[in-house]
Amino acid sequence: MAVTKWTHAELPDLTGRTVVITGASGGIGLITARELARVGARVVLAVRTVEKGRQVAAAIPGRTEVRELDVCDLASVRRFASGWTDPIDVLINNAGIMNVPLARTPEGFDTQLATNYVGPFALTNLLLPYITDRVVSVSSQLHRLGRTHLDDLTGQNRRYRALNAYCDSKLYVALFSTELQRRLTASGSAVRSVVAHPGIASTNLVSHTLSGRMLFSTMKFLLNDAEHGALPTLFAATQDIPGNSYVGPDGPAAVKGNPKPGRASRAALDTRTAQELWARTAELTGTGSELAGAA
Image (cartoon, rainbow, N blue to C red; front, side, top):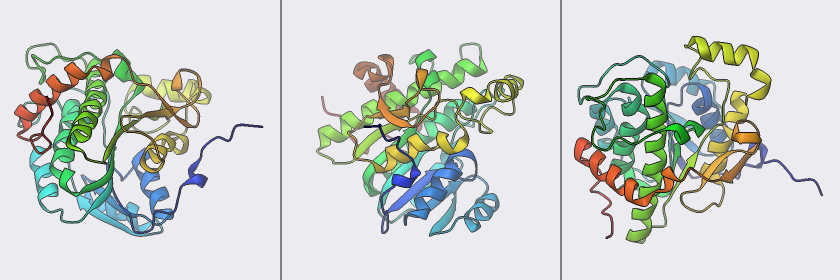
């Protein structure tokens, strides 16, 4: 018997469920929003540019809503969370940037760290009282090249290298999921924390770089298109998988293909490092005590 490859055609009916997706005005986030709305979910597009979000939402059949959120800006994260009052079935931390020049937020974080990790950390913790099913955090296979810098998380005391900063931020995402799941389990919560990654997908995430444009033009046949790149997130958001699952493409090196659960790197599953990272991030953001960790 042939093995069936999971696709968006197998999404369940999500009528009555609410999904919040960050960075949903383009790329994989837009496709994720479109597909979840198609099967009945109320989809909240949490986006930096509201007008762009409204234009996208207008083209999506189904129930959608647009709210302003810049995950790079902790003040914006707090405004979004303080204005939320409804249950959230699924929070998808999708927004991300890659390989950008150094710029810093008012809190001193480089923008890749702030967008990919620090903002989602704060947002998740502030919204936890409303989340009923799961948190999906979008990471990358490049988390395997990341390193932790617990004594210099903001990077103020080391040279900034754009690709290294991206890899580090995606390792932090996976470590965050590890510790979030540990804390949820310790508290007796049924909420799950899972990770998805798109492999290497032809989106605008790296199209602004020369290396990205060259990769897409010469090696496109080896990459996921954006539609396939969204499938791991859709799978992670809707399928009955255990907490801290790591979902990505099923092809060689998990670069391309249809979604299946795999395994994050050993570094991403290191519970001691995950606890230390959580504590440091909580200190820097003033969030994270909402879900106390067990000894």
